[in-house]
Length: 198
Image (cartoon, rainbow, N blue to C red; front, top):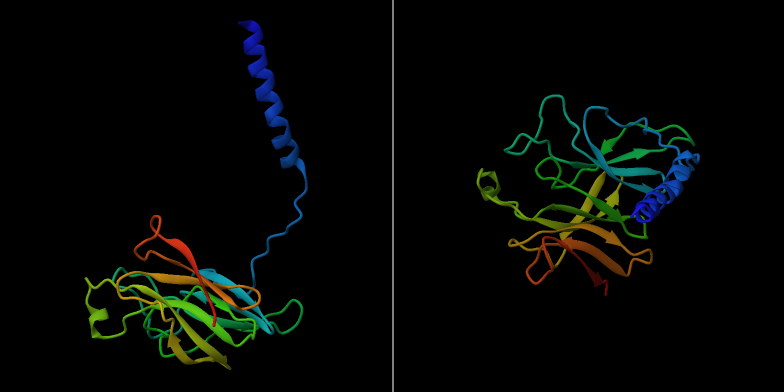
């Protein structure tokens, strides 16, 4: 009996040694808050591009108007901040589109061409969206970045008004679009799908 207890205690102590050694090692990463963060609002989904970072934020875009959901949550928009040198950043500016300020926009990804953006937003845009009890579903939208604008906006062909499609991610070569969806036929809540870009 004592021998069995001794084995259990030895096993327990030996299993803790790797964890305690790992905790003592110096970290190879240093976490630093970006200087353009608002401090008050949420900044998410950063994507590094040639001249800076594109990200999503629910920050106020105007001191006069503040767009929120019926539940009082601020809407997310897509922003670009230019890197002015190796350690300095400009002021974030919203990438305007016909969907800006009316719907949640993001998360997003950028195609290998550096100009095409895929982002999540709500599918329905009509007057029905102003009704408190209306359930709007997410979809993926594709646009071209031109200066401070997202132009030539078009919906992803598999968007639906019956289920969510979102969180786009492209393969490095741009041939495959990965996304999550709760469409019928899946294995639970949301599943990961992909489609080949033809």
